[in-house]
Image (cartoon, rainbow, N blue to C red; front, top):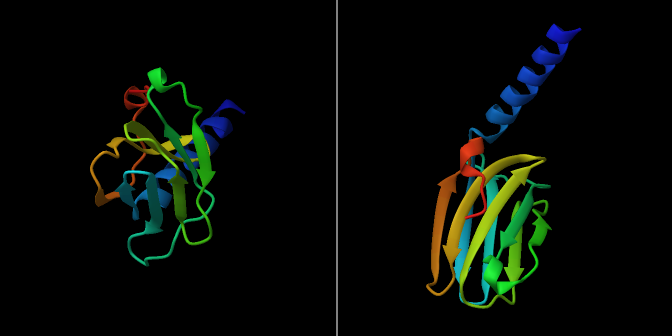
Length: 124
């Protein structure tokens, strides 16, 4: 029984890794908003139903904002004040992306998604 559980868990972790191997996130940062799109790099198709969280610094005492990518893989956080935010993208409970973003400077970037190791998960 124990061997079966370990094998099932290993298959689940491996399928999660394979599912994100060709995925990327494109992020657009403006003074009052952070928007983006999660997509399959090889096909360009959006990836739906990923949880996207945006956390302001603790001193700002703002709630964590949470949204889910739509059918085209898009997400948006609007009405932001200028400052630093922590953007995190999850598939279920697996953290795929984590980056601090300062919206005082407009920018755009695209990066591949990967499973974030446990040691990198702390709230910065």
